[in-house]
Amino acid sequence: MNGSISSRSAVFWLLQRITGLLLAVFLFTHVKVLHFDYNFAERGLIDFSFVIERLHSSVGWGIFYFCFILSALFHGLNGAWAVIMDFRPSPAGRKAWLVALWIIGIGVAVWALNTLNSFYRGGV
Image (tube, rainbow, N blue to C red; front, top):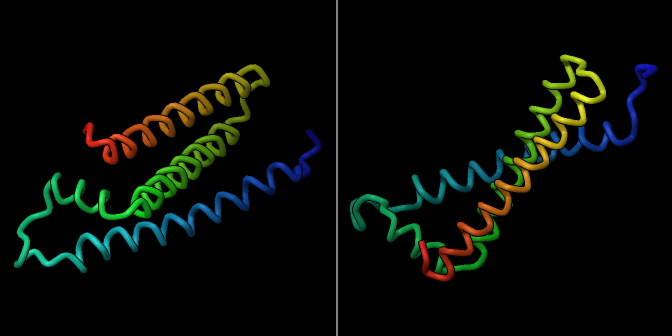
């Protein structure tokens, strides 16, 4: 390597910043809705049935949480990749790490979609 930054690296750098901003928005929305808009005096504590009821009230909440999860997943795995690259692994090590991170990413994304989907099917 000659030390130059590839356009691919620049895209991932930009996506890291975008997902960081999205995570801030998602987290703010999540905390506001669950901790400030919810009337504990009237309804009591938040329990599992409340979560199911809220997810059933709108497909938008499912989309919101899936995007939240995907943003967090990309942000975390891309950050892990950056840390791994700081250690300058060999080409074989780099490939092994990349495959491992992709497997983790795809596995967690499928698991998240399946979990959210089960709320809508009533199977959780």
